[in-house]
Image (cartoon, rainbow, N blue to C red; front, top):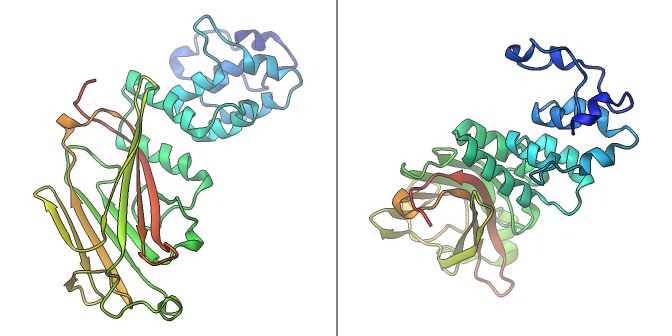
Length: 297
């Protein structure tokens, strides 16, 4: 990769000595190669080099470890860099890039909440619509415009989720009046509604577990000592089912047990259905983040 720094047609006008950390300024200022620009997270330099003839050779170059510039980008885990490089690597998708990132995060210990939030918000949410509120969730499975329940806010605390902390989720919204009449929703509430919760994971070594799911009635339920779901109407009164009119809240408290959780980049999905003949979607969303567990293989 460093060969690019000697090619006048494949170098930035920005000197390396003026762009990198002070401890490196003892070296003679030279122009950045493509690999150096990626590793230094200099998106503007990569944009400059990307427009030059012959850059494909440098993009596809692999070092003695079989690593290319995408491997370097995964160390930084900047989704902006990935979306810049992605068109040059059509065989690699965002999930595969996140897999590389999880490995890099595990090796370098970069699993702090602030970095997770930046990765998810800037990366996963680039092509999806974020759910309003303090959360890292996006509308998923079914397009937002085809979801019946109008979400006003989704509060998840803590965000990002910590496996050794109690998790609280508060979903607030309402069913549009036009839909109530159109679907002839029952006055006693959405008694046939269901909620499907699924999870999948990519581990730091690149291995993964396929999605597993469970479906249960969408109603106020104490699942066990560590998990509860309660529904409240517009007055804040707990009710059995999601109201078919006015606003409502769904409150969930839950706790992962780190000793039974393996560290990895987890994706959780929820998919609520009305339970009618058309299988109408109430709401559907997903959340992807790194979770630190204590379970080994």
